[in-house]
Each structure stands twice: as structure tokens, then as C-alpha cells.
Image (cartoon, rainbow, N blue to C red; front, top):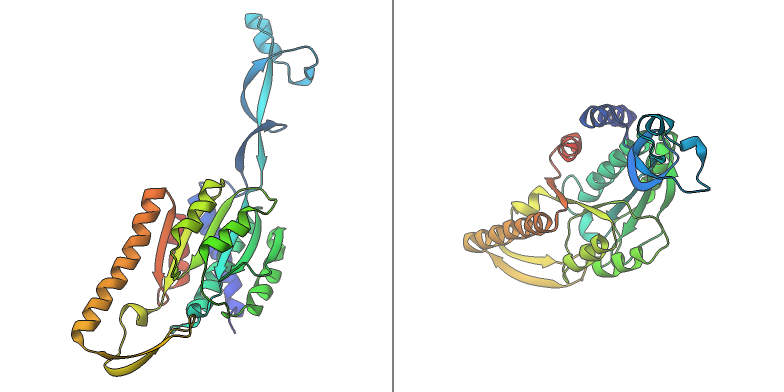
Length: 285
């Protein structure tokens, strides 16, 4: 069972960790740039005829004779969009990358819901699939886990460009976009994520890889099969080829890290043998 009875207790622990990490403020206490009715004073503006006198600053008027209106910052819940890669490459590894990614998704959803943020889950591969509609409140976590249990890694080639172009065209508020994927896109992931960033979303990248992808235990004559493209190739693997492969894989991981650093995106990478709680705590830091 993917989400065993102890999983919820572990999520509650992570929720407590997140509250400590954010100095006791809930994740929903995101101050918007808009002004309106709120409890936190922002600044003053000059009084003009017709302004609501309830917000007239009588203290300033009595002391300095200035006619000013108080403005307050308006707090809103933060839209959190969790992108979960459901392409067939996510079915690889031990433990399976997709199962690991689902647990991460559930943990992040729980932390956001506990903080009264509004979350959506968007499964994707070559396109966006039917997702989990925006919900708010910690009581929704069971529905979230039931939805995640129904998902399987069955998509074709990952296409970040097509997915993000379709996503930003939807009528919705911009917010926090968390992408959980192995980032295997033959056309490149950069254009799609750039589209997301340029449309006002804050991109957070979480890259998942299997231990056997970084350290393959293959030797001799083997037949390699690409689960997403269907291509097959016969190769002879020797020490020299393994060394070149490991170098290429390291360059791939470093390339995503460098891209994230250049663009100001948060980036976290993890192998599937790392406890997912450790990844979440690293994210919170």
C-alpha cells in the first residue's frame, strides 16, 4: 500500500516542521500586493472626498493636520500547483520513481492544506491530463491521496513546452508551481519552465532519479529499451562506456541545477533511496 496508516502521521510531523521553519506563521499568511480590508497596516494615502471615513487616521490629523487614509495589506491564500510527471520513464527504479514522487506530492499538498493554501495537482507527460481540482483545508488530504493512488506512469514523451503553454493559457491566479519530475524531455525542459516563469508563476523544481540510473549495474552485451519512445538498441557495455555514461548523467544533473540558479528557481534533486521526509525538510530550508 502506497499510503500506509503511518504515512499520515509522518505528514503531520512534516507540517509541524514547516510551521517552525516559517517562524510560526502559517503558509497561508501570504501577503498579496493588493490593498484592501486587512489587519496589517501598510501605508497611508491622501484623503479624497468619498473615501471611507472608517479608515481616516484621526491621530495623524490631530497631531499634524494631515488628511490621510490608512491602507491595509490584504492577505489571500496562495495557489499551489503541483505538477506530477506521469510519463513512462517514471516507472523505472527501485523503489519506483513514480511512487516516490507521489509521496512527495502528498507531503507538499498536506503542508499547503494545513497552512490553508489552495492546491491543485496537475499530472502531465506529453500533455496535461485530468487533474485534481483546487481545494483548501487539511480535511481534503484523504481525497488528495485517493486521487494520487489512481494515477499511473503511462504517458508518452514528456513535453514541458506543450504542457506549460497549455497551463498558462488557463484562467487562474498565478502562484507557486512545484514540478516533480525526472526532467527527461528530449526537446529540453527550459522553454516550458521559462514560459511558466514569464507568466508570473514561481517555479520550484524537484528532480527525482533512481539509484540504478546514476550507477547502472550493466555489463557486456545488452539490449536497451527506451520506455517512452519505444526505441531499442543493442550495445556492448564496458568500463569505458560506463564511465562516459556517468559523466553524461552528472552533466545532466548539473545542467538543471545551473539553469535553476541562473533563473532564480528553487531546485532540489534526490535519489529514490533518500527518505522523502529528508527531501521535504531540505525544501523547507
